[in-house]
Image 1 (tube, rainbow, N blue to C red):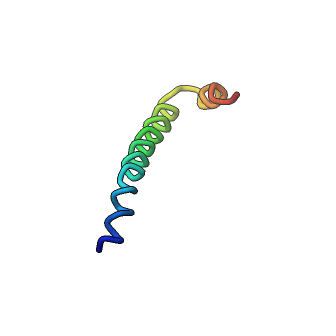
Image 2: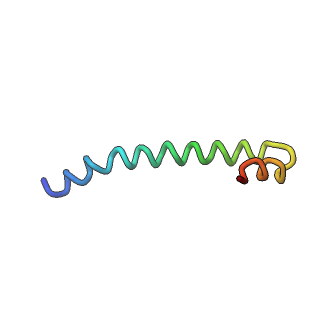
Length: 47
């Protein structure tokens, strides 16, 4: 049991960060879809 608890404690920040990044990604996609002119919004993200 002790062997399985250590990786879980180390993975918790990674899991929470992945949830945050997933929420940010969904928000960005929703903002892109809500914008008029998808090609203009896509061109803004290109370098």
